[in-house]
Image (cartoon, rainbow, N blue to C red; front, side, top):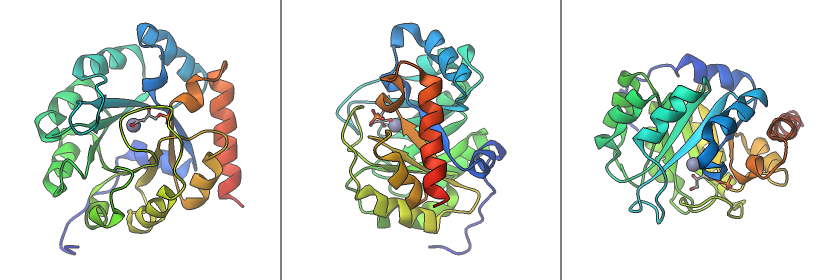
Amino acid sequence: MDESVKVSASAEWVAETARAGATIVPSLLASDFANLARELRRLEEGGAKVVHIDVMDGRLVPNISVGVPVVASVRKATRLKLDVHLMIVEPERYVEAFRKAGADSLTVHIEAVPEPTALLREIRELGAAPGLALNYGTPVEKILPFAKEADVLLAMSVPAGFGGQKFHPDALESVRALRASARPDAVVEIDGGIDVETIESASEAGVDWFVAGTGVFRAPDYGAQISLLRRLALDAKSK
Ligand code: DX5
Ligand code: ZN
């Protein structure tokens, strides 16, 4: 790594969640898209602080989801922090538009941007927290040289592209390596297959942000499920 790289502190809101110990980040991919305002209200009332929005282009990943207009609509409907996960090629073409639409963090994939330093700095200058993601199956060594540029380091625990997949425990090796390389005020985020069965192992490995799509939205009471997941994560951490 280039030791001369000057790195900024994490966005204050990200650092605050890091101090909170464990943050459950519901993924809207599993929500009812025809009733987003209601879903967001239920998440807010249920104690969520951050919501995850998956942007897929059918090129970096084999699926298509939502884009800038949906992020802008979500922004108008909620005060939750918007954690925008860009599973797209050429994300540099779109970060400004997503920031203008209201993204609070913008995470790009190392598979799409092998040399991400300039883009992560641009995201920070735009006023969003820069995030860097590693797809499941990509060697963690690809991302480590850039770890200190990111406020959010995301490890996929399933191949990116679809909700409801089975958690891969070997992703926790990447989590540990990311935690060891991250700035202390940055957060490590895990994405894919997080539920009551898997969250404790992720927490023990050093995860701060736990994305949960089906793990939250399948439950009848989102608030109760968020509380349960958070309790499991905090208890596992203090073991
Ligand atoms: C998948 C997305 C995830 C997805 C997770 O590529 O990045 O955020 O919503 O869904 P679950 O939690 O159901 O595995
Ligand atoms: Zn995601």
